[in-house]
Image 1 (cartoon, one colour):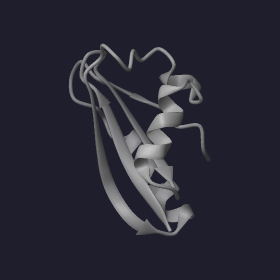
Image 2 (cartoon, rainbow, N blue to C red):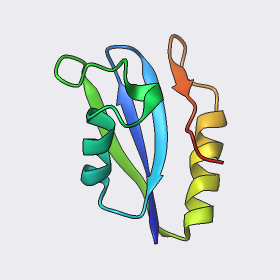
Image 3 (cartoon, helix red, strand yellow):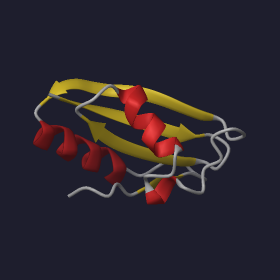
Length: 87
């Protein structure tokens, strides 16, 4: 089963939604180490980044659908959504 999570960089005013079948904190470690191209500009030591698990226990395809639906929503003024790499 998969989880959907949101990451909110309050310093850069950017939002990112992702999915994982592993614990979210393990996936975050991969993001921090630069394994996600769209998140490489984030400064994990200086930027204020908030992480929230949005959904748990979904089949992977449903989690992907939910993440893409979330990223297609209009962000608050001054913010932007970063596109996930998945389909």
